[in-house]
Structure formats: structure tokens, C-alpha cells
Image 1 (cartoon, rainbow, N blue to C red):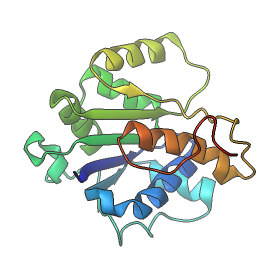
Image 2 (tube, rainbow, N blue to C red):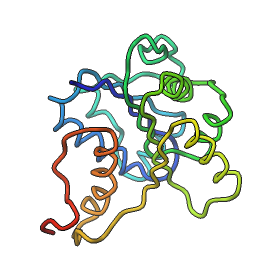
Image 3 (tube, rainbow, N blue to C red):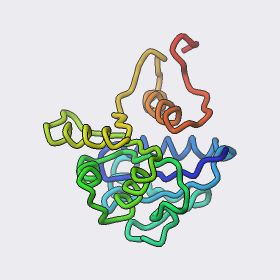
Length: 189
């Protein structure tokens, strides 16, 4: 069954994670019915600062929505989206979701995903965590979200930055239910 997925990109550091997941989703298009992308106010600026480009190449493959577009299909549970990945997820976004504040398309879509008991994956990019962060993560976990810190693994013996980033991305794609050929423990490095 093909997936209806939302990718939300916030202004946390870690734009490379968003770029790599979008690149991998382009390869996995045969598993996707629809993919909507939404950027927070700061996300495009952080992307440009960290990656030296603007994220235009994905608009040919997926539909990009503005953060204030409450007419986007995934602003309603009736659209039937099954997965939302917020990557990277800022602590501000996480806090607003945990508090039930739906003031833009990202937080509205996350609220919809939670109320519909679908899969919400928050790829948090912060260290260290303070008590407010931890309590918000606990609250969202209890509500059904998956907190997946952008913590790479090294048992695959990564050789490049993309290899390191892919240890996180492959895990996120697994969590989202995609058939993805990433490194598996006990496999060849």
C-alpha cells in the first residue's frame, strides 16, 4: 500500500537530514501516493546557510506547501495521510505540538496525525536537553509520537558525511514503514 506522507522541515540545525530524506524519498517514489513538504519560517534560511543552496529541486517531485496554507490536504484528518516526519525538529516546534498549539501548517498537521492515531516521527536536533524538552518529549511519546534524535551510528563504518547522515535517515525510513536498503547490523559495512 502506497504511503501518504508529510515532511516538515523546521529551522533547527541539520538541514542535511531533510535534504537526504527527500533525496531518498525520490528514489522510493514507487512506495508513495503523495508527499507534501512544508518549511517553517526559518527552515529555508538555515538550509541556505548550512547547505549553500535553496531547496528547489524537490518541488518537481513533491508538492511544497506554505506554512500558512490551511487548505493543504493534510490540514484535515479526512485526507488520510498516514505518516508525518518533522526533520529536523526544533524544540520550539516540539513544544508547540506538545502544548496543542496549531498556529501553522506544521503544528496543525502534527495535531491531525496524533488525533488520527497515525505515525508522527520527530527527528529532534538539540543537545543537551533541558527538563522542558524532556517533559515535552515524554508528553508527545505518551500521545503516540516517536522521538527519534538525529544521533548517527558508526557500526557501518561511514566514510563520508552523507554516509553518517544516512545512518539516521535509513532508521527514520524504517520507522516510517518504507522498504529501504540501508545498512543492517551484522551486514557488510
